[in-house]
Each structure stands twice: as C-alpha cells, then as structure tokens.
Length: 112
Length: 114
Image 1: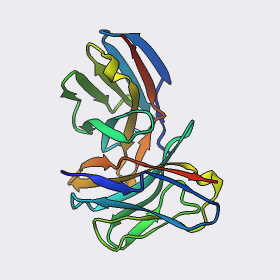
Image 2 (image 1 turned 45 degrees about the vertical axis):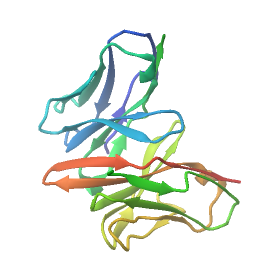
Image 3 (image 1 turned 45 degrees about the horizontal axis):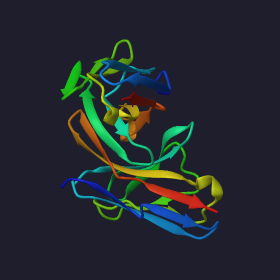
C-alpha cells in the first residue's frame, strides 16, 4: 500500500529564504507526482506535475524534483514571500483507479 | 475556463436528511473522483469513476453513493448523513493520455452534519 510522508508538519521561515519541502513515498511504481497548494479552508491549487519519466519541473520561483528510485520528491521555493504561506501537499498517482495518495501536508508560514 | 465546479460550497444539515453534492467538469475528462479531507487524516478517496456508468469504491466509501450518467457530472449522495461525515469534500477530474495523467480539483464543499 502506497504511503506518502511529508516532514515536518509545519515550518516557519523569515521572508527571503530559499527553502526545500520534502516528500517521500514507499512504492516507487508511480505514474506521476503532483504538488498542490492549499490555503486555509480553500481548494487545492496544482503547482507542479512531474511525470514518472521526468526528473524535475519548474514554474516561476518553484522547482520540483523527483527521484523515483529513492521514493523522494522535493519542492524548492526560491526567495520566499509572505504570500507563500499555505499548506503544501504532495500526492502520487500509482495509476490504480487513477487514485492520488496524499501526504498530510506541510504548513508553511513565511514571516515578513 | 477549464474547471471543476462543486455545489454547494457550504452546507449545514441534520442527521438523516438526504443530500447531494454536485460536481461538474468541462474538460471532457474520463476520470472523476471524490475525496474527503479531515484534520490529521489528510485527503482520502471516497469513490471514483473511470467513465460513464463505471464507478467503484475508494478507501472510505461507507455512507456514500455516486452516479455517473453523463461524462461531465459526478454527484456525491449521502442517503442518511451522520455527524462523522462532517468534513471538507473535494471533487476531482483527471485526464489520461497514454501514461500521462493530470488532476484538477474543485474548490471544495464544507459539510457540517448536526
């Protein structure tokens, strides 16, 4: 059974720091991995989608990498801003019934 | 605009009163699914549908029903809601092109059962 872990559960950093959010998964047989952002009480916004054949994806200040063999992904946020404060969720798709298995998320707080 | 639309956004109901949460997507996606999100438990899949008239249980299907009569719609039905179904619900649709999948989520429905 696929399990996705995100540690730590919460993170507080000063504005301007470059930071790395980690995600690990137990079954490397995935089709893709997706990073989402969730603001309190809101929906999920897709940030980056990495297919299993890819090693990384970039969008603006965000860069996500994928190492399938070791079961790890990282989300790199450059020059963090208070507006980046949110919960970041990692989810893997193993293709079985197209289900996403989610981590519990990392709640990020960027202090001005 | 490509989107998944859920209604209502907020709902307070009483135990046992049947309700339906609607979900519609305009992207012609074959796959649709429902998730619930609870503190400390994260997001868990309730039901999914791989195409019209094809539905199956996810990880936490008890107390829920779904139907897929049209490709664009995938309603979630609670025949007799109970307080333990108080949660934040998300509908999602996904495309598949060969081995490539991508997900889009709705904005969520916050359900409170009293």
